Image (cartoon, rainbow, N blue to C red):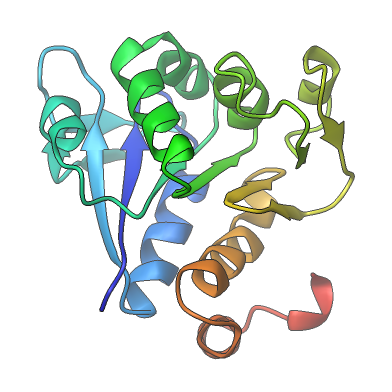
Length: 191
C-alpha cells in the first residue's frame, strides 16, 4: 500500500527543499500532495526565489484529512516563519507527531517550526547552520540528514536530495531509496 504525505507550502518557501522531495518521493511511488497554507485559500504559492507553485489543495482541506502518513516542512525565510505562525499547521504537525507519523523538516523549519511546538525536546536534529542556537533541550548534530525515530531533519537546499533519500527509506525501504538515488545520480557516498 502506497504511503501518502503532505508537503506544506507557505509564501517564501525554499523551492529546492520543496520540489526535490516532491519529485524524488513521487518517483518512488509515494503519493505526495502539496497544500498552500494561505488563509484566503489561494493555492498559488510563491517561493523565496520567485517560483510560483500551484498547490494541490488548501490547508483547511489537508487538515481535515486524517489519512496522512507524514508531513514535510520546507524551510526558507520567510516561508518557515509563515508555517510557524499558522495555528492550523501547528495542530496538524503535532497531531501527526503524536500518532507516530513522519515529521520531516529542513533548513530553518526544525528550529523555527518544530522547536516551538515542543517536537525537538530530547531529540537529535540538524538544521540550517546558526538556527540551532535558538533551540534548547535537543541535541544538534552536524550532519546533512538526521533521523531520530519518526523525525527526519536536514540542513538546507544543498542537502535536499539526501533528505529525500532518507524520507524514501523511511516510507518504503532502503533499497527503493538507493534505487531512486542512483537514478538521479545522487552519490550514496556523500551521506
